[in-house]
Amino acid sequence: MRSRQRFLNGGYYQALANGIISALIKTPLGLQQTLLDIGCGEGYYLQQLRHAAMTSNTHLQLLGLDISKIGIRLAAKRTLSAQLLVDSAYQIPLFENSIDTALSVFSPICPNETARVLTSGGILIMVGPGEEHLTGLTSYIYDQHQPHEGNFKAMDEHSSFSLQNQTQIKSIITVKGADIFDLLTMTPYYWHSTADQQKALSSLDQLITPIHFYLRVYQKVKS
Ligand SMILES: C[S@@+](CC[C@H](N)C(=O)[O-])C[C@H]1O[C@@H](n2cnc3c(N)ncnc32)[C@H](O)[C@@H]1O
Image (cartoon, rainbow, N blue to C red; front, side, top):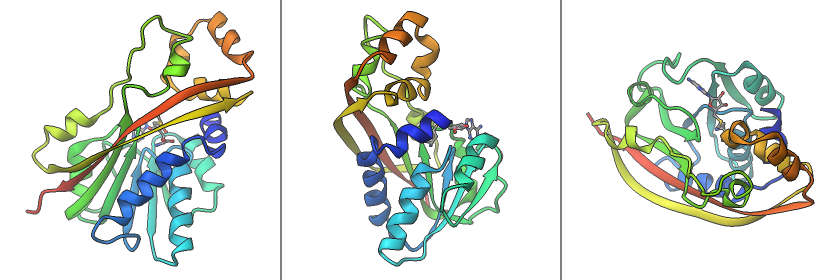
């Protein structure tokens, strides 16, 4: 969690943060609504959203939920003006129809619970990895890149949600020094790497890698 916070604070995923903000601005309520980040981790995207709302002087009510106490504790130390909850995405402690937009970035999601807390016609912005995501990193670990699967399938198959649009966000980043090990540590690839591979990555001055995300916008079907 700390690795994730240090890495994200380095601005390497700024393109994704900008994509999320743009997607939210395009929703019917724009930046004037209630948003729940499900699996918010240490709060980087909540911070980016708060900053966008402050810059445009809009009233964005933010909530963040994560099962990790450490994540929520780190998020609480940011200046978010958000309500933060330690709980599970599978049992969200909120009333039904209380959230205009849910956000899920690389986190587990429960379609039923998400649909329950969303308003009728509410929006889900969901981010998962693209095929080229972090191939510059995985080339040190695997002979053949194994793309990490997102959770889109569960949403696509759920009758409460309809897919509105999908965008891809792609960029090339140069990760410097100690940030390389933080990047490895914050991904599942850490658990698949040998001590030698970790050592090799740690000794690099820089790592150039594509980042590649799919950002999907779903709407809760009006009942
Ligand atoms: C890959 S991290 C992504 C964190 C954050 N969205 C980001 O992109 O920086 C996945 C997050 O999901 C959280 N998580 C895992 N299982 C969860 C669950 N059942 N309910 C809520 N959060 C969960 C983890 O604690 C972790 O913070």
